[in-house]
Image: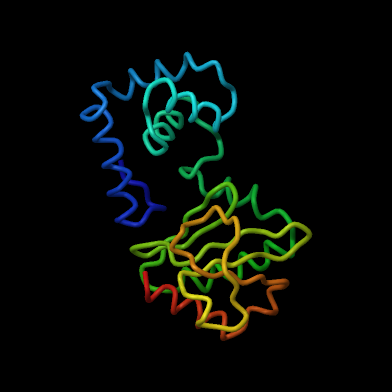
Length: 190
């Protein structure tokens, strides 16, 4: 199944997770779905832990099984819904829209949405953006902090470990040509 909001590399990885499930566990996806329905837990993280502790499924396979067992209206398969739910603050939304236009203008860039951030990939994730409480946004980039004095090391970010720096942005007016150049540099490395 092709997902238009995934890069070819991400699609290949998702296909391999699907294909290897039965081969490596001895159970079909429908059998795993039946097992997952017996889980006594209600939350996603608790269900992941239950599948790991009781059935030996690790994060990626367990997440795949749970996404099929308990489909949500807001998953990576519905990026528009995730974006609408995430970017509700007008200031943060304006920053997102400004970064999104610039990131998607880069050849081969694909936007991917998550519950806590929006990311852009080519072969690999090169940037991500999440709203900051109270307005503004945090931009993560796949470049070293040494590339620009205003960049800082990520702390407790949920996006890809490839993003080695971050930059707080307080308003869309602060998205300068230098920030565009940093986005391009990160894109070139992906």
